[in-house]
Length: 206
Image (cartoon, rainbow, N blue to C red; front, top):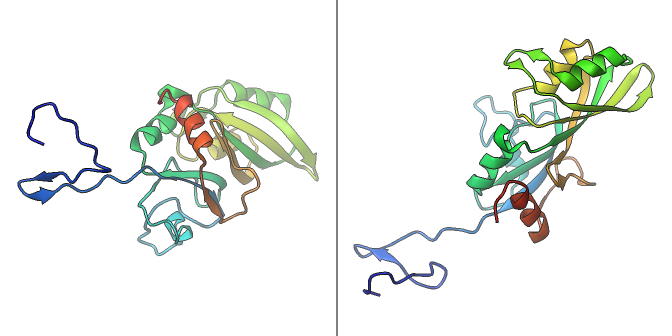
């Protein structure tokens, strides 16, 4: 093709520059993982700890974690090579809700819940308002549902500890419209087309 303005389809056409073929851009891949405890949210670890990449032996395409879950936290982790989607899902500007189930020591008083709902000062500054509700109280332990729209490091753990509710367990169960469901710890699956479309729509992408 030599005419100016001609469009090439990289899926069908062989495109070369100075006689060398351009690399074919692979399709985007979206992987939902239920991260277990004791796994780091990186692709490699200098300390030799197990990484989320180690849990994806059958995924041949290089994908990257969207946000992080700390070493002791579990639950929903999205990995993808769709950089624009990853950026928008993690940027506070888009306000994507992240939903967690949190087990804390003690029986929360209303003033403690009110603090979490209005904002708490942690290491990185004042947090935005969170949605918090009590799910279950048992044996002086309480399960909370906490929804935040920021992505600060150890945000929920610091929030709860600052108001006097130390965290024993923390699991992310939803990212925007994407739910963890019944995926077993350590297991993963590919998102279906509807889930991808819904996620992209949530951040203003077609």
